[in-house]
Amino acid sequence: MRRVLTWLSVSLLGAIAIAVWAAWTFQLNEHNQLLANALEAERQRNFVDMAHHVEQIQAMLGKGLATGSERQNMRYMADVNRHAAAAVAAFASLPLPPEVSTATGKFLQQVGDFSLSLLRDEAAGRPMTEAERAELARLRRESAALSQQLNEMLTQYNRGGFRWHRPVRLSWSTLFRRVEPPVATAGAQSPAMAALLDGGWAQMATKFEQMPVFIYDGPFSDHVNQTPPALSGPAVSREEAGQRLASLLPNFDSYRTVDVTETGGNLPAFSFRLAPAASRGSTYTVTAEITLQGGRLLTLLNDRVLGSPTLDLERARAIGREYLARVGYPDMVPTFAQVQDGTAFVAYAYRQGDVIVYPDQAKVKVALDNGEVLGLDARQYLTHHRPRTLPAPRISADEARARLNPALQVTRVQLALIPDAAGTGERLAYEFQGRMDDGIFLVYINAETGAEEQILQLIETEGGTFTL
Image (cartoon, rainbow, N blue to C red):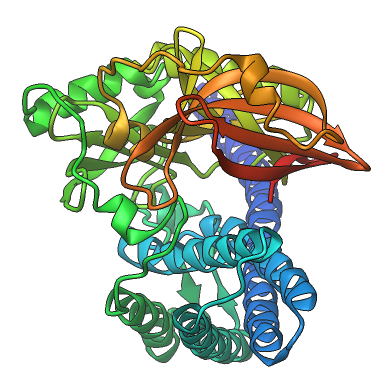
């Protein structure tokens, strides 16, 4: 009788345990489904947004070619720059292989910067040259082809039930099996849709990699990126690069390394792909690059889901500056910033004494929900930063001020080292910030010759400060 009661007790406890486990897995699967759907909705929205902005880019480029008015063309180029920035932001959030994201993202950045350079030239009274018009026509054709390809991919994705992320359900069949959720899936692992995904993006990347060298006066131009870097220091091995990365990421222990590759270009580096330590499979959420020479942190990108913002832009600026000093980039001061989609993108420049050295720039992306640094781009800093003996100004600030338009009401003046017009040299200048009519302007007067080097207009919005 006692044996029967024992078996009944064991059976009852087993049934209770199974019921509890079933209820727990049901709740866990429901929660996982909600999170996966939210992330999927964000990815699909970003893809649709990217297609929309690329479509607008090619339309505005076409209008810029068709108009005979410089004033109208300035308007169209401003729209191109705005849509290009939005397209880059949407594209950067898509979980694509680096070989795809690098080529396409670079093209979009260059289109935006080329339009901005045309806008600045025409605002300064320099009309578009025939070479620039030919370049604009080529960019319109490339943008139109990209827009058509994106729309075709979007249509076929929708027809095939495409998902960027498919939730993993916990069950007896998956409990003891290695689960590797794909970065992107098509329907029920459809080979045709998978081929479309790989083929569409791969063809796009190959097309942009084969584009001719893109030269213009802007920070993302190829001739600037191909400048021999001033980076110094001993070469590091893959193991040493991993140790360096571990010391630079405060929460490195919460990640595991998925793979490590070597990248070439102007600044060769080890590229690390990291995933949360508790996850399985090859899906990564963090990428970071450590330079082969010197072991410096080159880039960082964390693609986590953001919460509701709790920090303002001023706090984000301070966080970014503290982070730069911690990872080996001290004496940086914030220059321009932008707030978008719950993050702050802040540009910093190196300060040597009382001179702002604009060629030595780094960009930081800060999450506004908890202040975590989600991104870093130190390419420009590592390319240009070196020990400098700055020349002493040959004219005083008052003498430089006398060269300004008398209508400009100066609010701030400081010394700055700026790139010359060709992007191959540097000039020491007085940077005057002032107001005229309803605009805020930055005027750069050469501190040696007194010549006016450049004028930028500051555009202040709720999302940050921009220059034209």
